[in-house]
Image 1: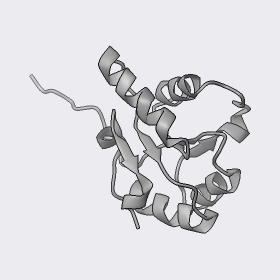
Image 2: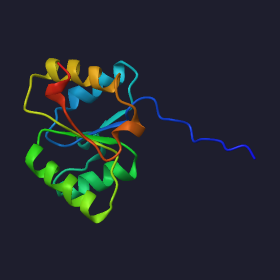
Image 3: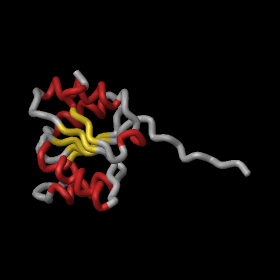
Image 4: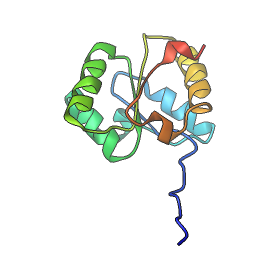
Length: 125
């Protein structure tokens, strides 16, 4: 019997929460990455858990500046056996620096590798 492995998602699909400037999504799309933002989808004023649920339902890695709350959510989800498609957290950086670091990250981590992981954008200088 031949077993066919599901195709590995080579590049991260990103979902930027409402704290992340929408120009970051536009800049990454210009470089052919699959990115949507809370601004574009009208997903404002939702709880952090609702944002993570949406990202997970779309198989997208969530990017946020809200580090403490999403680290807490990550641990809660792991304890409950829930899976997510990855979380990227960062301190507030300039738009240009954020884009540079996100490009480094998305060129190094696959969607499959991001599953249930947290990445610190500062590590991708």
